[in-house]
Picture 1 (spheres, rainbow, N blue to C red):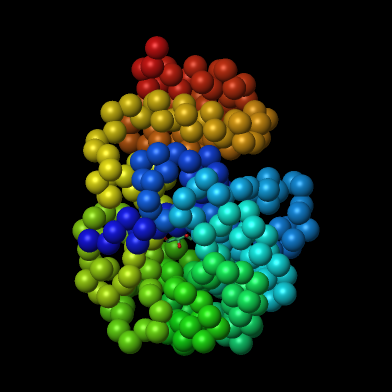
Picture 2 (cartoon, rainbow, N blue to C red):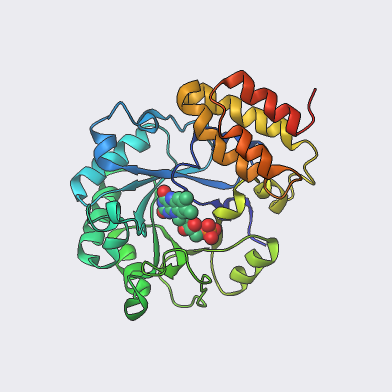
Length: 304
Ligand SMILES: Cc1cc2nc3c(=O)[nH]c(=O)nc-3n(C[C@H](O)[C@H](O)[C@H](O)COP(=O)(O)O)c2cc1C
């Protein structure tokens, strides 16, 4: 099977922040991580309200930092900032379907419609850094325009090192099943992404000729999944302890006021499928106090 660094934790906005990545790392020291997408404007402007603009990545192992934007020069500047902050590679978002990114900003998935601009952005990023540059994209804009292979060639000519491919079109959003076309004659390594959850799924895409597998939603509430896939850890006995540690990191990073409400979604994922999880979610959604939240977590997971 793929070796550890060929297994990727996908970028998930609002989820794969520094606290969550630190939890994943405890179980999987060698998998490849990708940050949430960061706007090149926000990075270059060093906007204070966006805390991740100031992250340092030097202690995060093999980590790619993802940027989005439509202006080649700004994207190059953002790439350089991230390289200086310790990123091991730069990933360019060419798949985000959210209107704010893809239509209003002409970035993300929009770049699947404008390969010329996509090429310029890649070239500018490659020119600005000494670390590898990758792109993350989808099969195409819609069913009638599944031209990802053309974009891979553009990426190669522009100096990119690899491509992560989500097996859906922009029009599909997250609907339907991700499609994995067999890989042959591609000029760059292609990392498969979309609905991958198990070792069997990973073996399937490996057989199809992909060079790695990227896992997104399957890690929600299961940050140890990567450790299990890579054989670093077995069954997890005390989920509550992990939850408390994750909460601590979130509170440290965001502070109580923002951190407590932000952690609710993680609690919903961690508790999913457990007895009384619905009541637990209702309860924690009302809590704003840090100590009260900690006590509720201890009670739910039976920690003294
Ligand atoms: C909540 C959420 C946030 C996401 N944020 C990003 C992002 O910041 N950058 C990106 O390239 N893709 C993002 N994606 C797409 C995922 O990286 C991934 O391509 C998609 O979820 C399919 O993989 P999966 O089935 O393994 O989750 C996001 C998806 C979700 C559900």
